[in-house]
Image 1 (cartoon, helix red, strand yellow):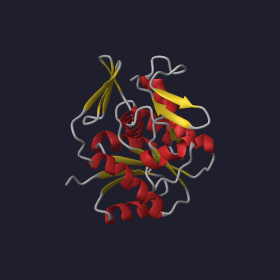
Image 2 (tube, one colour):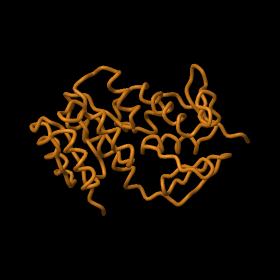
Image 3 (cartoon, helix red, strand yellow):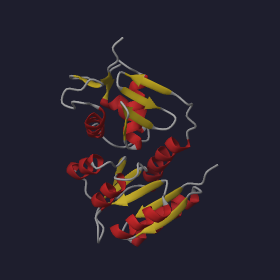
Length: 228
C-alpha cells in the first residue's frame, strides 16, 4: 500500500511538531515548511499527496501559496487559519482549498479531515466514463472535459460533481451534500457547499449565471440536471 507524504506548512514550530508527530503515528511521511516560500519549494521538489497550509506565514502567505499550487496541481489542500472570520474561509475555498481547520483545533478533528481527504486518493475507482451533453466525466482518472478541452478541478470539486452526476435530477440540501461528499466527520458549514458549487459552475458551465448542469432548487438545495 502506498505510504502518503504530507507537507505541513506553518511558521509556528510547536504546531508543526505536534501535527507531524500525530501524522507519523498514523504511518504517514511528513515534511515541514516554516514560511510560504519554503512551502512552495518543498511542494515542487517533493510532490506531497496532501498539504496542510497555514494562512499567516512570512515571505508568502498561505493564500498566495495555494493559488500558485493550484496553477499546476490538484493535490488536496487543507488550510489552517487562526481567524474564525468567514471571509478568510471563503477566500481559501475560492482559491481552490479543499478544506479548512480553525485554530485552535483538536488533533482528532485535524486527523479526521486528513484521513477523509487521503481516502479519496486511496479509492480504487472502477474505470468509468459518462457523458452528459458536451460534458464528459472520467471517474477513474478524475478528469472532466467540455468538448475536447480538459477542465482542471480540485479533488473536492470533482467529488461533488461526481456525486451529483451519479444522482442526476435528485435535489440535495446543503447539509446532505456536506454529509455525503465531505463526510460525516466534516465540521464545516453550508457556506462551503455554496462556494464549491460556484467554483464548479465557473469551470464547467458555458454560462455560469445561467447553468445547464448544476441547478438550484430555491429554498431546498442543488441538483445535477439530466434531460431524460
